[in-house]
Image (cartoon, rainbow, N blue to C red; front, side, top):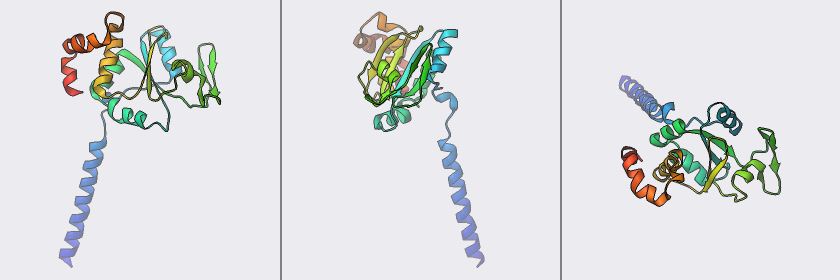
Length: 189
């Protein structure tokens, strides 16, 4: 009986110590996460302290959106760069809530099955995920549709974030400038 009791206690201890180990493994450092905000928060922040804005336009049903959330956006080099150089926004394209931006109110549009702000940002090309880049005055730089892994995404955010989109072609940036500027980050992507 005593052996069975010890075996039971040992089993319980192993179970709880394993559970504690697993839960501590799942905890993430919040510094490694993108500090998402709403689009109206980003707009207000831009008025006070101009900075580029990056908008992740997603839907709840989009599988590749979820993959980007789990893999691309959780990459420490990506999160660090985004947090330092952009106002990062999460925007559910299908939100039925009105969104007020400046003097304009955007509403859900039944015909497009999306909020008018998503339709405007994606220029009517409703593809998910899409990342929209705005300049420091909240003017459109470019929407980029489709899934991007951490390595490709880091190249794009630095290309736009460092204003290389005004100086050289993206292919030239990737093959030359990016490798010189971000060789250390490229190893971790």
